[in-house]
Length: 137
Image (cartoon, rainbow, N blue to C red; front, side):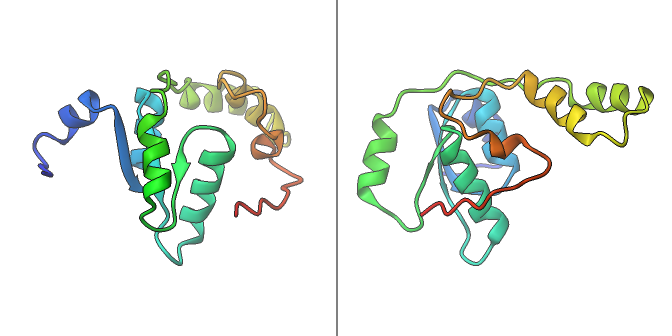
């Protein structure tokens, strides 16, 4: 049963979350080390893109409609380790103060350096240019 007043405590004590493929709740789940199963909202390209990225990065599962097989696989998956976010604001301030504004890739490299990605990750997800098409069937 959903309760607005106990949501934070419930999130901290649960082993996994099923939600839409927005940004905030999936990010919190990754940060806290929760299993994540997302269903993109139909017609929302950002949600589809988020869901594809989560799967490609090995950070979650995706289903387009209720799928007992995917749900079973997700329920049996191991609980991931927490992935705390680095000091994004501090890195941006340093980048600006260093006057490196014409080199956004240096900022991207610095921000992604602290993010542990699986070895199979296709690095085009962390590039600021040269975006490649991801079909994400």
